[in-house]
Image (cartoon, rainbow, N blue to C red; front, side, top):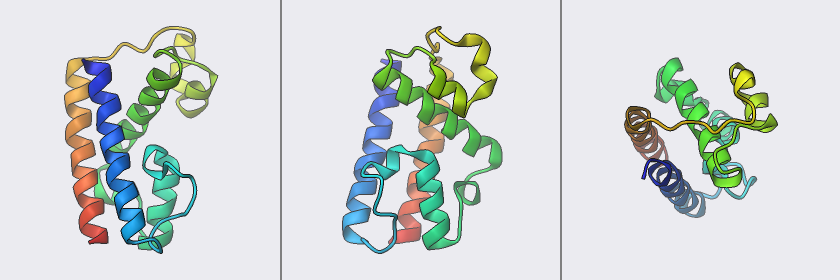
Length: 128
């Protein structure tokens, strides 16, 4: 249930992003295709077209937390939740946990859903 909540939330966020990109095709980077699944590229796109970064919509700790959770979603989607080299490249503090499954926590998922919702609403308001 926790994994499905994480994956589903980012999928919904990506769906909103695709709709916004179609409707406002000059306001976002054209690549990657799944821009709203790629936290760093989304941040770059927001900076390029709106002069803002994710940190302008959320606090630094919240932005860092969302980045981490996007990486967690990636390993759950593509690596059964096991921490790999790509994950560690983005989050070196997890180096000692390489090869272990990232343990999802209910409170962490709840916090993630709240922060992602805030970011989603902020981006939507910016564009619309």
